[in-house]
Image (tube, rainbow, N blue to C red; front, side):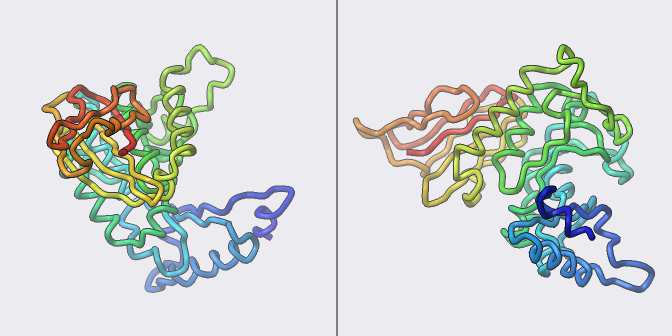
Length: 304
């Protein structure tokens, strides 16, 4: 019966499996992989491009890559490290999806180590099919976590430009707030457009368009090139070209990168800014690139 929702006139894209970490598990029984494979077959036999995504609020790495779930809700490998890096220093977050101890404040290096640790334990296929989310109906909202619109823009920049499938919880694009799942499950204020954060809405529209227009953000590989307490820098690379991203949570020392571009010549073009409004980047005589020091900011340039 459930297959019919994937067919016309409904045409759903796939299924999200609630509490997937408990699927097929009871007592000594552990049949998660078998059940996931059965459900995947049902989806892809009904529509070849159907997607089946699993809800995991914890370590999901042993449940993927067995021809079952295409991907997961990437709370552990994306949401939590981004929260811990960008969280407001004045906001008290008592838990993360029920995990006691609160949400710690971590450096860029620590957040990146968490993202890389989880990403390294699953295939690229599973990673890009997983949902990159900044919150959901079960968590605080990202605006409450980070405290302001500037840091939310940095979070959204990561969400739309790192490998994975961006999943926006309804209302985040309007700057809605909520301290926990119950507080976040508020109706969309369709009838109160005056309550919307128009600038944040514009940020999300621009990032959606950017991901649609820049093929490297959908199909490119990932190479981390710099990290410090307050800045993350990475490349998305494909045969079509390369783009350079800077995510900065606060102002700091300028980031200087060497070896990414050739030393300039008279005809050498500057790096065109694709997002964030920074000026084009012009390499120094030795090819070094100096990225903006002011923050919070999210910037994206195309390499020549």
